[in-house]
Length: 583
Image (cartoon, rainbow, N blue to C red; front, side, top):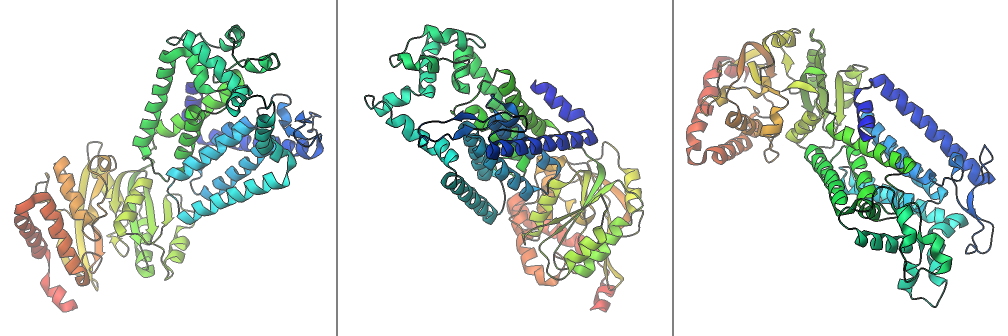
């Protein structure tokens, strides 16, 4: 079943996925509307009545505590909301990545609907899922605080103002505990339906612990087990079609062997999930589905059978979406990704964006990351972006330059990734077209010539041909024209955030340790305005400090030799006459 769901999601077209999503949203809306009709009217649009009406512990009033809408006497609407609907909402977030707040809002709505259904297990499921999502989700603390506060306020209002919800979620504890005062509290817990199911399950498990009694055997074996607290009025509650607990069901019917294999499968699934995105992640869809599956499988709470038709379909549907999120590789849609990080440079960013977007070769993705500019840069970016599909704009808080680069690399979809700083431009509009001619499937690293200008005068031409990277010539590679194959970042890592201005040097040294071959495309590709982050004389002291720190870290006592090579290659490139004239 899981494989069927997985391959359906993996191979259907994007248009069909959107149709499926829209269809499910429509179903969710209709089912929710029908639930509200039943809640306020007593019957739904088909005349189905609410369930569990007139429980005496609700002050002897004829108040219904379970609502199932279209499902009629099958009281599973809460499970539909907490598993199917929640899974779909989280899955939608993987397609609509900017829907974070909308997704959270929809989860709140689901929570309120689940409380109305009166299904306590579903309420526990969505609350615990919500908790684990916020434990792992990388989001602003104020949004987390606001969300938790809203959840507490909604819960308090629902319980305080609604007698049926109060009776279902609060009063039933005191009701069961106050009945039959001849029993201790421990005995009263054991004589609840959950306690009786647990007792029967443990006895059956101990009778056949290794291999279990077989699928759906609990319903047949249950009556043959006697309990100390199994009084006549409780017999009909001690046995059921399943133990109402997934862990107990596995132990009784599959034994230790089946239970161990089942748990190992999910441990491997979670391990793959953590290796894919880590424990803390900004991928709300993945961590949401991961949290939901964890709650469904590992949290010991009342639940439906994992082997029954309806409940099993819901659970395995959720699991299949998680597997899809983990194993569906991000399709590379572009040959190149160009990344620009900017803050408060409205004039420079205009030149750079126009230079990139005017390229005749269109198989590229352009990502601009703005560090919360306040000088009109944001307006210029949005104005130039308009409806261009290959232009992705990301607004971030004022974090470091390299942190923004790392973030953009994580969001990129190109086979090769290059960096173009704000204010820098391509030499002409056919540069990417020329580059594409020289790149093939065996290319991993390549770079071009870089030209530094100041007031339209060339002050430095960075052009050194190498075919193999060594410790002595790696300083000849200009970071601004360097393109790195996306997969390489997984091996060598991203930019080191310990450095504010020279992390590119550290990255190139790490590239040298893992890859030796590099391709030099011997033509000018980028014009760089002298005076940027690393070329500005005001940053000289910090640049010197970080360069030396990186060289010492990688080369120990020989750092001074390599620093000499670095300075030598840089000095010999300068056209000092133009540099002095510009001053």
